[in-house]
Each structure stands twice: as C-alpha cells, then as structure tokens.
Length: 162
Image (cartoon, rainbow, N blue to C red; front, top):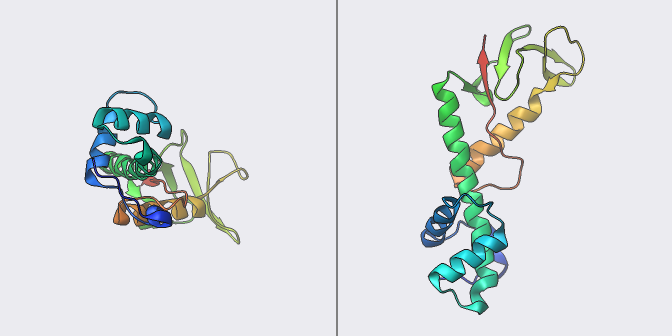
C-alpha cells in the first residue's frame, strides 16, 4: 500500500483509491470508524510500516470525508425517490406548507426581515430558520462536486410541498 507524504498539503486533496477502498472495507465490519482504530486495522491488514502510520491516519481522515459525501449522495437519492426536492431548488412561498426532511411536523413558510422560517402548526415563534438549511445544502452541493467535504456544515436538506 502506497502512502503519500505531502507535508501540510494533505488536507487539500482526496485520499488514494486503494486507501478509500480499504476504508470502505473497514466500514463493512460495523465497528465505529475511529480514525486510530481504522488506521491500525488498515496498517495490520496491509502491512503498513510503523513510520508511515501517522500519514496513514491522515489518509484515513480523508477517506472518512469521502465516505461521508458518498453517504450524503445516497440519502439525497433516497429522498428524491420519495418526492423531496433540494431546498436550494425549491421556490419558497409565503404561507405554503412543506415537509422538511427530518422534521416530524409540517411547516408553514413565513418570511420576515431575518429571512425565511418554517413554523410548526399553531406556532408563531420557535420556527426553523431555513437560510441555515439552504447554506448547509449549498455546502453539500460543493462537497458533492469536489468529492470531499470542506468542514462547512455540509448536509443534505430536502423539502416537499404538501
């Protein structure tokens, strides 16, 4: 297994396909993917030298990042199949009722000087701030394009009109 040593530039790239495949293989074990635990597992399985383990830990971190994007893409596809739309492509309209993925209750849309909010039935306060959800989904779209996250709160945010 080839380990790349690139100094401080390691956060600005994806890991190697070989390490990513090893990470996905580890994920099939069902154990929680603590970086150190995955690093030791890969090092033992593929005979990585002790002096390369620190860099392998960096590579595992990058692989986890790529895996998270892959999971978000799968979630987006599942929600699209259930009739949801990315919040970034949904036209928000005053008074419309929506289902926000992950919320138990429908939300009524309202806009004020602070932006768009979704309010549960019979609530005029304690709404869900939708600008935050839009920003999360925009960060996800960038991560999907790059194949890795950028630690910007990336999340799939989908809505459905009701």
